[in-house]
Length: 115
Length: 119
Image (cartoon, each protein chain N blue to C red):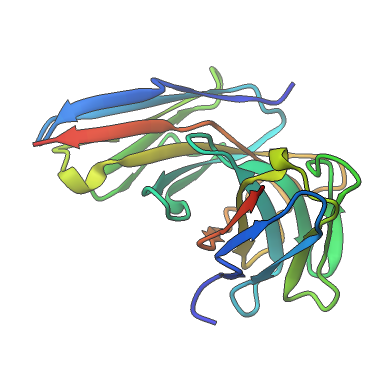
């Protein structure tokens, strides 16, 4: 079954600290992996998109890594800010029959950054 | 338009009523997705359009749910004979490119959602 599992479910860190969020998936065949940030009550906003040939991609203080062999990805946030408090959702795109990609969402990690 | 627009933003209805949720994607975007999101959960795929063609409707929970995109732009998600378990945030997203091929990394843009409450 094609699944995307994220850990931890929730995380609390102090402002200025770093943190790493994990995403494991079983989607096959794999097309790409995306990380989204979702503020409370808002729609998800894209942070990074990586294809199977990419190992790492950065967007400011956000760095995503991908290991397509072990089917794992991580999102590292450096020097966290209060505005980083949000849900972070891992989305894996799998190439399905008919030649189109289907997006499978993880349940997200809820990050709270405290002063 | 500048972004993905959804209406209504909030809808309260009585059990048994039909509701129609509208999504106006970014102009020129080929792909359009509908998702449903329960509180504290990630989005759950409902259906996907490539232009006006409904490529995948495997996520629609049952036959009370239907969606259309007749001219390849605006889409409507219709829920007939609503039930309390249908209460959720319904989100629409669009992408410039069709979601095909392993190298496609078309960015997905989400709307603000339609919050449906069935009493």
